Length: 139
Image (cartoon, rainbow, N blue to C red; front, side):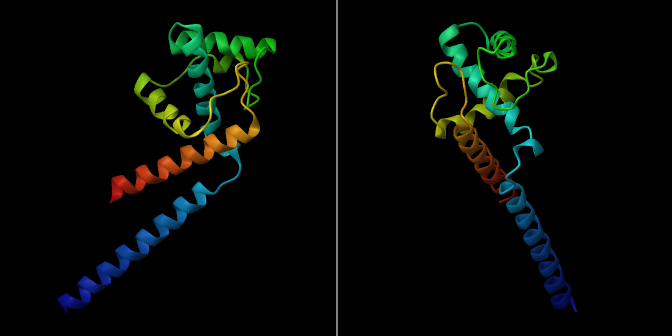
């Protein structure tokens, strides 16, 4: 009886693990960027790259960057340029984590624009790193 119970538990865990893995693959392959915050994170990468050359803090430059997008100086990959998006709602460590995928994506153009292909590359790198992180935490 104990052997049967342990086999049933193992089967239940296996099914749960399979469902979890399939759900992660569905999220990983979702082609619609409007379903996630990755579009905001791509903007943070733009701002970070701009901050390296402009100076100041990331948070100060983010406000300036959004203002420049509203004026039309920079193209927004997200189409979001309202006042609501001027404030970054993440602490420095979280912003740093959003920058990790940019290690695998070429820097934005000097004018601050982020072409759709580059945004797609960033989104793929972000999702892949989060997928690896999830596996690492559960491993």
